[in-house]
Image (cartoon, rainbow, N blue to C red; front, side, top):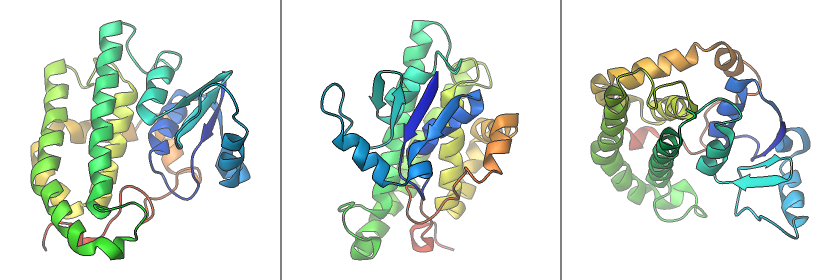
Length: 236
């Protein structure tokens, strides 16, 4: 199968979770907007007159299928890319974990855009400081402790007993949080040995290591989901 991934240029965003799965599996795919520009996404959606209609990128074209929503895309890609266990119960559990990751990613976004995504960060800076404090002190420890327990209870170094797209997504989540909240993550990370080990293990996978040093990997920046605003991190 040759896949077409549609996501905005210039940022990692939610599309990066899909890219990591495709790269790790050595799948044949084209990142459409990076080849043709962001207008290619709009033009493609304008041409969709029947069948599935995505609300927003990322979405994936796989043969006749058009699949949107990051967790849904990964749920589809898991079996053909061998990035999920074969049993239905573990496939559903992987999907559950991915949806929980998506919940945290949304909270990270809202830490710098708590009022509206249509407003600049500078227009909601006061509110962002309050929201980010709640994220750092309450929500991050709650989510990350949960994922630490998931790995521990699996009795394996993997959340779902084998290397999966969940490993890759937790890797991306940890990197993004360390970029956005370096001081907070240094504090919280002391209690996350299994997540930190997972992050290092994924980084050493040959295809992931090659991808991270390639031009295809867009650096974290202040236009994506994970943004580093020093005033939103732990006090110095």
